[in-house]
Image (cartoon, rainbow, N blue to C red):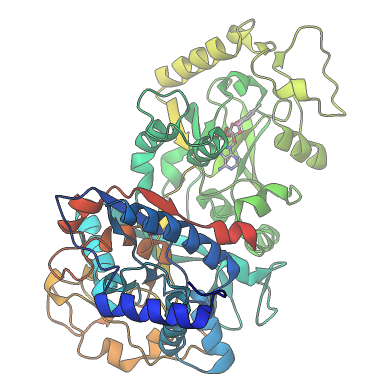
Length: 555
Ligand code: ANZ
């Protein structure tokens, strides 16, 4: 026994021995109890930081202890290697993202090895490697076949000087981070995953007290956050009929302005309707009203996040159009409101200033009538100031509401829904806050979306046999748009899989969360070229320990 711990010598000798014996390489062994210890795969940002060290040490201690006790322990490592920082580094240093990324991987791997982590390096994966991302593409094709993946237009942040799409974090005070130009909201086509079809199932899994819940044991506040994120909202979807026609003489929206409300009991208090700036009625009205067109343009500048929309000052403008109240038959003016989201419900609201705080602020600002239609015992309505009880549905009873007078909230909602249904104008509906997942990025350093655009057949999936669609490694982004547009090799010789005509590849790439949503299963059989997730997963999954994200909490 030596007096001093001569770490350099001891560790050098230990590492040499582990390397020579391949000490941490594991194979599936049915005779042993397995333990799968996984860490969140790191982004190869350059160097390890103390958050990484802490994370990996926790699993390392666990792995070593269990191994000594006879467990068959898998502890893999990989690299979340696509994404924006590599492109930013390219812009700054003029180095291709591929080179920057692989150099960082080599450096960080050597740091991890110097730490002596008990990692099975034979299972290392890098998400920017075609042998990995080809499975993103394969899965995408399968989801297209099933209708889970689909294409539609999406609103993005557009930098008009760099002619490029910006991530939310690249928009600072409504301006592009590099150019300082006022950012526009633009609609461009993109790909989505239909996760909202699974909303009910997801909710069942997380909801506290739900008999189908599988997340029992997780902290309640995490589960509640998830529940609010999924955001189930039960209400009524109904239409205000109208006869507003477009330039060709066709009724816009088949003559119906649909809205979603959770407070159908307040329907008799509607004094206006408000539509989102992107709503077809807004576009129609703006075509003959330059002031409105300018207002809509103004709404399109600035951030697109929900938080930004929620906190900004409520602004609006009348469209000059009106629709018919479905119960009273009165004319109701249609406004454009900057607080109405196109992507929620129907992109339009019934305005009830007496009972919705946002509508109250809006009505006060623009001199719109405020008509109380529910009351709470012992309270008196004051038109000058908002009070919380105006919106308190639990204690509300209808007044000034004709046939609905005296009904409490729930009963009134059912009665209103029944009347609307009898007129063929509406029904009860569940709306979700959860949105479909927009997976395309108008960026270079990611998994190419396996689509070919044919002048005749439109967006055609790349046949499975032609996968992977390989991302060129030699592009150096300069900040002005996606360099794949200009990369001749990427488009050379591409033909439409349907008709054989010359065609162009899709240049959008996938969100990097696609990469990191299944890597833990790939580690179980990392080199399998026939299957995305193969038999190894049956042995190792479910993982026994996951350490993820602590580094974010520390930094
Ligand atoms: C009239 C009303 C009266 C409302 C009232 C509330 C209180 P949650 O619970 O989040 O689902 N809304 C509907 N679509 C919208 C959109 N696209 N953008 C902005 N707001 C929208 O909220 C549902 C309520 O949010 C709906 O109920 C609607 O306002 C508004 F005293 O309708 B309510």
